[in-house]
Length: 127
Image (cartoon, rainbow, N blue to C red; front, side, top):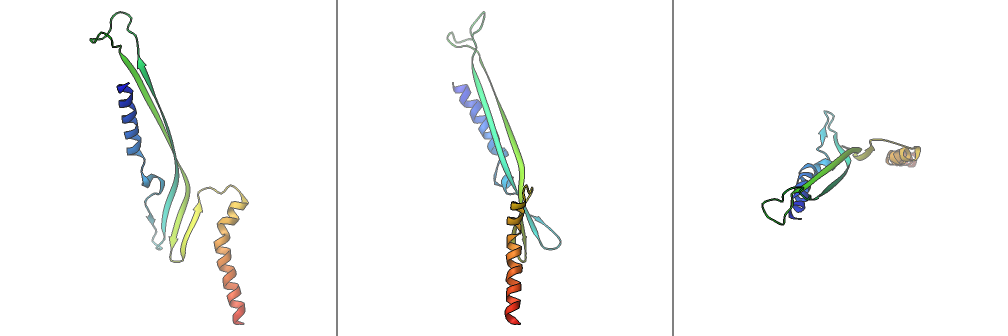
């Protein structure tokens, strides 16, 4: 089973090399207007590995009690954009990559609505 451990270790090391924090929270993109846009993604991965000793039909390997080993592994990774963090002089805003419903859109607009309402109410007190 030492060979299976080796296959599993190599698979995990390769996956570890492919996935890091910058895969989930990307590098910022700077606009000429002074905004920073940071992509946020969802990462899903899976892997499988298997193997075993196969009895030889005619002759065993050099060591009398050892059969040839056969094994393999596979892995898959999915990276899907989820949202963008937008930073400007006014604050931070989370913009979903995909809006599925009206409720999500309302939640997204809530900070802007509250800011506008605050400004309107502040203006009434001055009159």
